Image 1 (cartoon, rainbow, N blue to C red):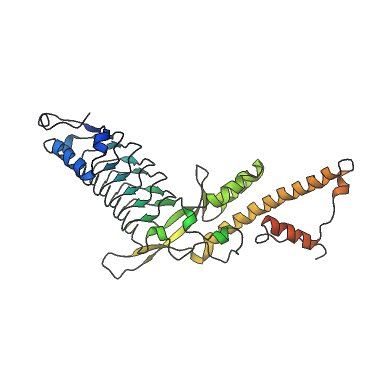
Image 2: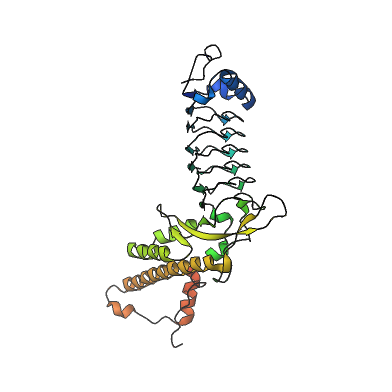
Length: 351
């Protein structure tokens, strides 16, 4: 259903508004768009609007566009949408929301106070989640933050009283690459710093939530390596991941590391602030152990390839003739070349 005109708005009782977003309208500023929208809605019964579809060519939803539409439970957004303005859906009855991959920014309090909102799908492409964007969404239990997000605004998910799971897909920005590249020992920290920068330096993003830990994806560091191994090795490693403390293999095969959240009292009246900390490097130890296991299987496969190459070089001879004792220094050189030296030590002959 299209937005009713002012002429028939008094008699219309729409269950939803359909923004066709004609190209001419898409060129207008958000202010003009909002003004025309509210001119058409000012006589309409907001309390009867339950569904909204935002059609093609609409690039932004202006501030307060659907603020206080307290019966609005369903919204379908188009793939050309780029931003959602301040308080755009604040206080609505939305149960779920899926943001298109084209959305770059959520402004202040875009979905604040949506007490029925239990499912939020944020796609890759989103860069910034504004201040209080999802605050006081009391039904929200889990949220996954895309790897493209570079910052969370002040209190972005504050006072979400049911939020117990947060998954960050962008582990590259906060985890120690030297550690994951097999160059540091398990005694070294896996986090780059005491708190995770995307949580905001002031620790306010998840204040007032019952979170005790966050999950950060490490699939970018391990999944490709696991995928190159034989099937039986992959199954073995996945089973070990499931049994390793502070590691989790998700249903989509994404490997995440668990990091505890610690609270620090604030001098302000706003209460304690939350930070990520790998207490006693326990998460680092679990990740290091899995990396060692992967390196072992990789080295095992490399050894088989070396043996096959030597065998092929003397195809007319017996295979046993190709088995030679490799001196310790040569083993070390091979392991350094393959990148295993930081994790595994060679068995030195005669040691």
